[in-house]
Image (cartoon, rainbow, N blue to C red; front, side, top):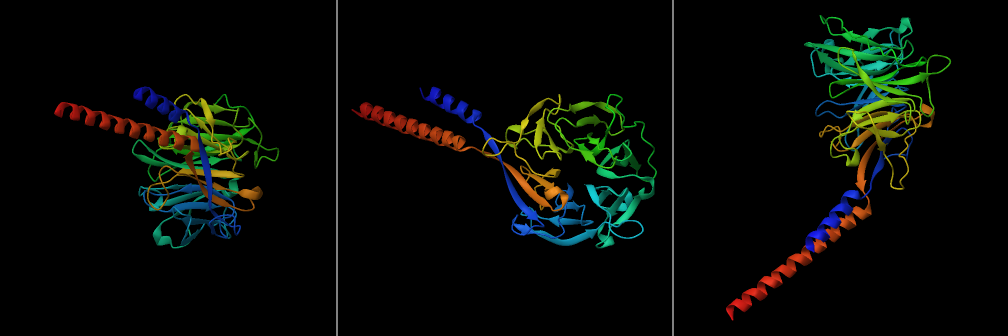
Length: 371
């Protein structure tokens, strides 16, 4: 009977729902989050080193700001310059652990068509490494990777509809071209991210003017490429995609979607989970009411590094709220529903009662033996 009771409770525990809770850590709007930072305006990409704080690209402020796990601001603010003067609009960014790209530790793509880098010796202003401002390029995302013993940067050139590859000094050109012959006309690379050694390229529909994404249900694709630029295959198409931008892999500790690929939609602010092998849709992150968790203007998604840059089982996000005129940086954590806790409590009670009964039975048996 005890086994049956425990088995039943185990099933109830496994089947219990898990919801995801959003916490607002930083915003430029006073009172919206735990901390206020006027520079956090339309934040896009997030990156961190193995132990560093979060670095966030503030597109409309032209800087990158730093925050710790609790959202407290680190004093360093790095300006991202625009060739010819003024500030560029940083979008995607990556941490660089190698000595390539002038040894810059953090690298930034910009909507202006530049790639900038920062290392400690530069102080509070990054340096420009790549300048395509006069060519009509607009970089919406950035990835970094190493193949064949060489380092490369990969930039999502949205306005020109391609992935631009920047090899480190002395590195040969890649054999692949990041092309997909089956991709419908009117879509362009919106972002590129290195997830576990694969390059995931998210595509958004281009608006009539040719410079911005068009939001709408089913408007989006995600492809997987290798580090040489060869197409591995289509990962996700249409369906729940809506101007998808962020792609990341959840750790096993992230509730029911642990180990899955998460894709964040800029278009509708939802986060959807996909099987990492097949690309099958597994579900959408939902709040405590069972509704899809929606973060307006959702851009970057990143799990913590276990150091100053967040907890490893927590998903951190950046969003350009209020039509990209303001900003929000926050966290998302899986939380078991009360029924889960109730099941655990009941399980403990049953085990305790059983233990006491067994103690009493043993005591009675010992007494009988003494007689």
